[in-house]
Amino acid sequence: MKNITNFLQKDFTLKLKFYIIYTYKDKQTLEKERKEMAKAPKIYTVKVTTIRARGNDRVREYTGTLEELINEVFGYTLEVGNSYNSRISRKPKTIRGLLSALQKSSDIQYGCTYTREYYELVE
Image (cartoon, rainbow, N blue to C red; front, side, top):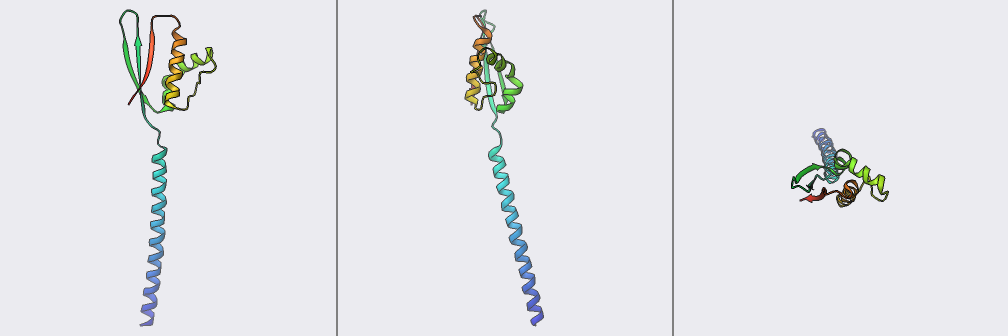
């Protein structure tokens, strides 16, 4: 009887240790997933309205993360603006900063022409 009790107690202890380790790992995994979800980059949609003198107005929308929009979509416009005015950032840190830099760069890029581009965030 003593052997059976001793065996059951050891078995219970092992199961308890396994359960504690298993649930602790699950909590760690859940915390990692929560942190990754919090770090997931936001997706923005920027609407570009081009107004021309003769009425051929055009509206385009670009969707992506902030980095994608800066590097792949609006990189040239930001570079042109920065080359004329060094206060215009080529790598804005926020979406509002991106829109402001794009508007300033567009004004520089088009100069005194009748074509204008306006940038706005689509919610």
